[in-house]
Length: 130
Image (cartoon, rainbow, N blue to C red):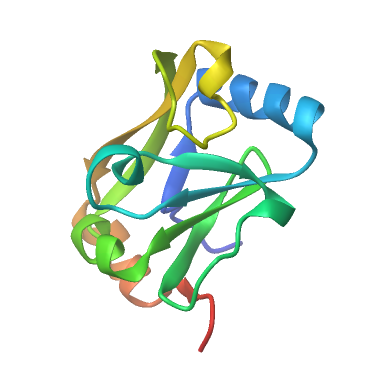
């Protein structure tokens, strides 16, 4: 029997639909959520070859086939929650690909239960540079 995997980041159907449309228009994409204020606190979508992931970033997983990264310091705040990426009406981040669509990506979250937290403790996030 296969071990159950706990995802650190998932996407709603609306987000998956928007990701697919962005990939069809721009090619492969990635997500980055840096923290801080304004645009940096939202998940931002970039062409995969136009954003340089840094040494202070961790990879949380992938949504819609797109890798999802977060600054390690921001992950410290979010590590006890599963990120749920949604797409809602509004303006996306200034440099995020979804901006002209009239939709924006939004992070929702839910707390992990004790068994999920125990599994995640045994499966740390992937550091971009070790």
